[in-house]
Figure 1: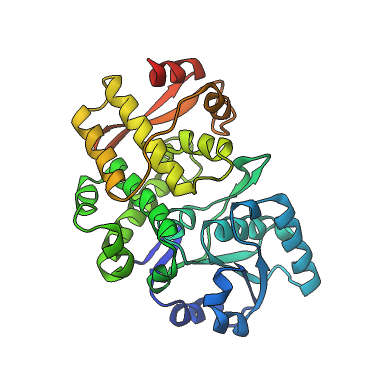
Figure 2: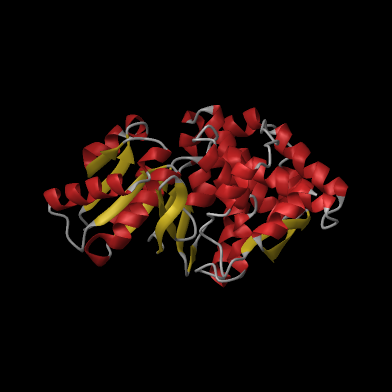
Length: 335
C-alpha cells in the first residue's frame, strides 16, 4: 500500500522497511514489556523506552514518565520516535510525539491486528483520564505505519479476535463484499494464515483511510468510524476492563444493530446476519442496558450541544449518523 496525504501504510517485515525511514536520524523506540520479547534485535539497534502493557498505561502518569526519559536521554526536536506495539503503544507514542517540545516526528510498527486496522491509522492519538477513554488527545499523523503480519501469530487468540471486531466494523460501514469474505474462513484459520487475511486487512485499512481523508478531524463523515463505540466505551468504563476494546466494540455493534432493527432503521435479517457473524468469531453479543450504562454514555467525549452522534447501520455496508439527545437514545434502546 502506498502513500496518501495521511501518511504511508506498508505491509512487510519491520526490519526490511525501517531503514528507509530511520537513515540519518536519531531513533528512540517506545514499546511495552510484552512486545519487547519479540523484538530483541530492534532494541539492540535503537535506544528505547519500555512501558507497562495494557490499557492502564494509557495515562498521564505514563506520558510523564516518557517525557522524563526523553529529557534524560537528551532527545531533541530532530529525534524520531517509533511506537512498536499495539494500540496502547501507538496511542501513547503519537500523543507524546505530538506534545513533547511542541512536536517530534513519529512512526508506528503495528504489532497487533487492532493497531493495524484501526488504532495506528488515522492520526488520532489519545490517553485515558478518570476511567474515560481517550479524553485527552491530539490529531497528528505518523510519518509511516508498518504492518508486519508475521507478528500476528504471536498474539493470544483473544487479542487477534479483538482486532477482527474492527474489520467487521469496517465491513458494516462500507463493504458488503468484505462482510461476506469474513464468512469464508474462521478465526483460527485467519490467525495462522496471514497471507489469506492480508487482503481483508488491507481493505479495512483502505476503508478507514478513505473516510479519514475526507474528514481528518471528525467534523462529519469520519464519525461513522465510531460504529459500536458509544456503547463500547461505556462498557469499558463500567466493566473495569473486563472486556478488551474489540470485545466491547463487538457488543456495541450487536446492541446498536438490534436497536436499529427494533426501531425500523435496519432490516431484521441484516441485524441477524451482523449478530451471527460476531458470534461466528466468538464474540459475546449481549450486555444489559442499565441506568449505570446510560450514566457512562452521558460522559461520552463526543457529545456536542447536548447531542450524541449515534452511528446506526441501515444496511450491511451502509450506516447513518443520528444526532440524538440522551433521552432519545435511552428510549431507542429500551422501547
